[in-house]
Amino acid sequence: MRVAIIGAGAAGCFCAIELKRRMPEAEVTVFERGRRPLAKVAVTGGGRCNLTNSFRGISDLSKVYPRGARLMERLLRHFSPEDCRRWWEREGVRLVIQEDECVFPQSQDAMEIVGTLLRLMRQLGVRLLTNAKAEQVKPQGVGYEIIVGNEAHLYDVLVVTTGGAPRRQGLSFLDPLDLRLESPVPSLFALNVDDKRLQSLSGTVAASVSVAFAGTRFCAEGPLLLTHFGVSGPAILRLSSYAARWLAERDYRAALLINWMEGRDEQEVGRLLDSFQRSDRLVANHHPEWLSSRLWAMLLERANISASQRWDALNKRERNRLIATLTADTYHTDGRRTYKGEFVTAGGISLREIDPNTLSLKRFPRLFVAGEVTDVDGVTGGFNLQAAWTMGWAVAQSIAAQN
Image 1 (cartoon, rainbow, N blue to C red):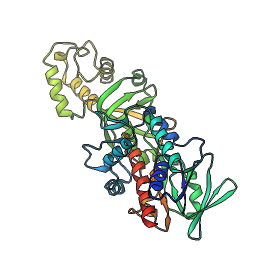
Image 2 (image 1 turned 45 degrees about the horizontal axis):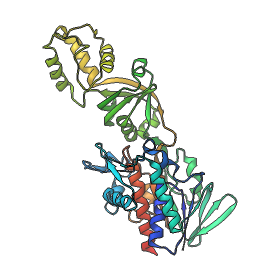
Image 3 (image 1 turned 120 degrees about the vertical axis):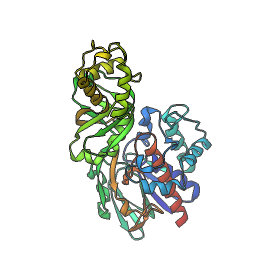
Image 4 (image 1 turned 30 degrees about the vertical axis):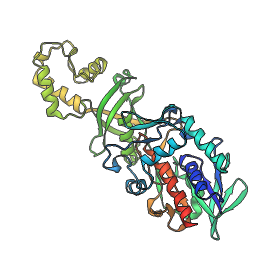
């Protein structure tokens, strides 16, 4: 049996390995349009490769998979995060689970992950072709014809794992199949905020904030990083994932609300300030311990409170302004920022086209899909790579079961 896999990313390479282990006699060829396989894996996690997450404390998968949570819930029963960790450890990769539940190789080197996958592909006899862009795919008898360059290749089974396509044109090779596609839009990005005071604090981290877009239910929590262009960090990346399509429709212009007080509401913050107001210390010198002095100084300025003011002299109007600033500090975003090679896309092949039991297309039962080419994507923290490993494993299992 001849199997073609289009896309040498995490899902495609993992699928190839698992398929050859189940069906050693199968001829498996992986086509990669770029010159390097697993290029995105090599840079993920800042080059350290956050390859999965422990999933501890996650009771609702929609919080980590804004799109595709129900499908992932089904698939993770068969290849779970625990299964994933065991898989890598059996291949000699030692892992560490961080306090934030993110899982990394102990080496902190993404190339260990890349090297392990490529070594296994070579050992198992997977054929890997780079600089081989699939121009078109179409059914041919009981199999599929793939046009690569000026050559046509026939295969019995086809697996599409091309990853996220930032634009609809990136999926044009599938046009002959007339599939329903969800328009691709970027996900997991930082936000531009044209505020000089905020930008002047570039490099400052607020360890625990909650962020939201005014007038919506989109909200997220976590560390916030102030940058020379605006805001980033896990809280913003997660918020951008939840609101990916909403933001795209508004050209990334929105009112961003930041609660700097570790999620405390106005009443709780009011009680905290009451305790501060029993002191005659300067407001500039006495502040919540989780906020840096520089950040606190900016927040006082935004609340129009003098740094030389004393806490016990703060009047009711000043107190209310400060509470509003600490719990709903408002900034206007005017664009997004992405990091080269680490983009994630919301959208792709509609889940309505996919058999959730096999990950084959309902109208093309010998054509399978896995990874970000589908309308499945996760928030930051190792969830996207876990989806790639799990979906790649599931496709290999399905192909082997059918043959």
